[in-house]
Amino acid sequence: MTEQKPNTGIISIEDFPQGCPLPYSVLDATHINAAYPEQKLEIRGGGYGSDAAAHPTNANQFYVLTDRGPNADFDGIAGKGKQFLVPDYTPYIGLFELQADGKIIKIKEIVLKDSNGNPISGLPNPKAFGGTNEAPYDIDGRPMTVNPNLPFDAVSNPIKTDIDGLDPEGLAALKDGSFWVSDEYGPHLVHYDANGVEIARINAFATDERNNVLVNGKRLLLPAEFTKRRANRGMEALTITPDQTTLVGIMESSMDNPDKSGRGSSLVRIVAINLISGQIAQYLYRLEIAEHVASGIVAINEHEFYLIEHDRKFPLQDKSAQKLIYKISISQATNIEEVITTETIRQDENLGLTINGQTLEQLIAENEANWQLLETMAIKPVRKTLVVDVLATLDYPHDKLEGLWLRQDGALGLLNDDDFALTDTEIVDAKSTIEQKYLDKEKTIEDANRLYLVMPTK
Image (tube, helix red, strand yellow):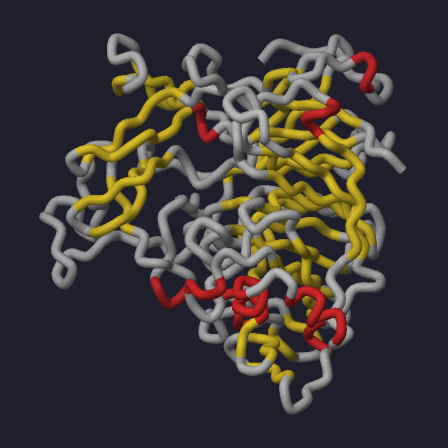
């Protein structure tokens, strides 16, 4: 890597070229691009868009988190699942810096490892620890099995899982150089040291001995209802309060709580875990519409946060697309862990708070007006104020807005998830059709990881 001049001051928005690309490597270029069969599919070592976080001391540096690896929807002999196009891929954290000339350089990569120092994978977890029976396949559509040299058999040679596998989505960078990462599998919250080695974990599985965060002799666990997360819709975003005491994470969408009858709700759960006192609080966030997703969160102070809500639409393909950033406050919101039970309100040990026997997800999915019913019961969601309408402010052409970096000057760095520059368009004869990821209908503009800076309104 060529030597770069050090930054002497924070790069301002005025001096920054919006949509500046992040550098990337090419992981694979041996497969056909289904959009243009005469071209090769370029699988890029980007995929950095899962989340972003500020470097604790350097104003021009930011961390980014990769996804579980290049993958595509697939339905084969082992059932519905994903093709892992680079099977040995290991998720990692990248450190990047804005240069005085407006360019972005990579400083280093931190590979994520288990507690023994071995690189983890992005493969699904076993059922008992967050797996959803998502079958992994290789690039040729063969099930990835315990014994790769033998044919798939559900009993004698079942699909391969990884108890340490993560689908990383949320990132919090701490002042001591360590990181907390949240994922979409368990969901799991994993604490990694500065070298990427696991040192602690918090999830909802009481039998998981890796849950080793003890406060006053008690192991911290996520509320049991978080195991009801939808496949690929787990804990999408994570942050830590400036005093370094409290992890705050948000689920991407409404959960399947108790089952798919809870799907389609505009209710999303926020969890706050105080690492000092051991208190675990839950708050409700109301999406503008149920089809939106919550995809990024960063702490402003101990009770206020910036949060991304968007619709996953491509602005160049659909003029109705929305990419919104809200300022939210939990100060007046109800901690549903502390709601007093009555004849109609119960705290179920597996489903969480229930109203007349229904979960909160079921209640809202049944009727959006039931938000008002919750208000009458003194159950209030977090307050939200729109501070950036991204598409009205920036020339932002991407579908996914997931990385959120709060800079020292108060500006927000926005980073898209480019899905390793590939997408799956359809499944034909049990084979996925994978092509380069394009931003426009004409398939002429390729997606890539890009950084944008914006100043939120007060």
